[in-house]
Image 1 (cartoon, rainbow, N blue to C red):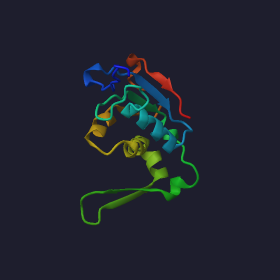
Image 2: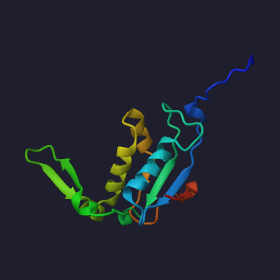
Image 3: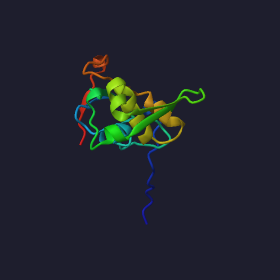
Image 4: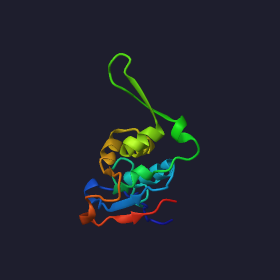
Length: 148
């Protein structure tokens, strides 16, 4: 019998090195983009992934205004919010939201793909969504990430 003992790697939050990724969202389906971005934000693409430690990376999503919605989802799906006043329910279709505030549409889709706990709120702070192609994070030398 072998006297070797196999140990499980548990990542220390101080030992995590973070990289920056940039994603071009033009023509990409909203759900497919959200799945890939959520996996990178949570750190599930890394071999040292630990569920209770934030091992995720930073993600910049560009061209959010050109995100794709397949089928008739743009007209049929409705984003609702409540203004906290009586009768204050506001409804907008996904197409209206994409035209006015595309960052909100992408952030909301990614937020719903994240785990439902306190750590996900910390992980979501590493997500930046930009409507156009230019962003302010070129100094971090982000790595291009492909979806698909």
